[in-house]
Amino acid sequence: MSMSIDDQRYPVLMATLRRADPAPPEPDRTPAPWEANLQATCECLSWRGTLDTLERRHAEDTLGATTYADFPAHARAAVVTAHALLEQGEISERELETKMNDVRARFQQA
Amino acid sequence: MSHDHDHAHHAPIEAADEVSEFDVLETAIRELAIEKGLFSREDHRRFTEWAERIGPHGGARMVARAWLDPEFKRRLLADGTETSKEVGINWLDPTGTGTPSDNTYFYVLENTPAVHNVIVCTLCSCYPRPVLGQAPEWYKTPHYRRRVVRWPREVLAEFGLHVPLDVEVRVHDSNQKSRFMVLPMRPEGTEGWTEDQLAAIVTRDTMIGVALPRAGWTGDRSPAATPRA
Image (cartoon, rainbow over all chains, first blue to last red; front, side, top):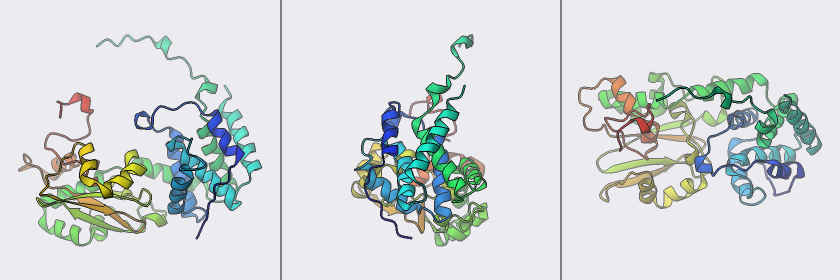
């Protein structure tokens, strides 16, 4: 499988940084639970042939230095995975935005 | 120490304050992928369960056994992939789900008085997970991956490991099909120890190669509860 990921900017992903809380410096922070979930998601995507792990790691390095340079390092896997799925056409921006709104509303329920 | 802390300080979680935007993004990606059939909820649950269960115990067991059993050590150095099965680790099917990235060859690198080994993955963050568990965060950082191959002695010194100049430092670069683990030298003060005692002092970092095992350090207690190193 060969994948070329360009540095297109997806508004739905760039907006996550604007909404993100300030994080402590990387060496001092404890990984959040969602990071383990994302790791498993990435493993499943690679295992089932949608997004190869090695290709994703390369994209994290490349896009982490360009499009997502302002994002905290621990968050790059999330935005790059979403970026790759958008670019491959597996999901659309509209679908992702709608789903994120649904998830946010669900998580904010008291 | 007093334990009369005020439980009133443990206020109920304010939901809105606890929602991370990246948590939202991760959940959205996962749910969309499942809805579209890219993988199943069971796939994801299995990986999470497996990843949280494994640790460096398999690697520590192999090192301890190699210290005690020269014939096991010979087999381990000759064929790490096959010999791993003797401690219950099958590299060809470590997860039970056939992860392609884990279908790989496993090599054990012996430290000697003349050679010190350290592992890295300059491509990404390939790591011998079946024997060491999840990679530490620093192992994944670009600066470790980039610098340890260029200036290994300096990087090891940043971990507090000063390798004498007459000891050769060998850096082993992992890749999708090759994983490595360091077999450290047995430290002084462990004469007559059992395999379990020895395995307890073989910590994750000693098998990456950024630390050496010590007779008084097992890594299962808080460093703050032990004498200053």
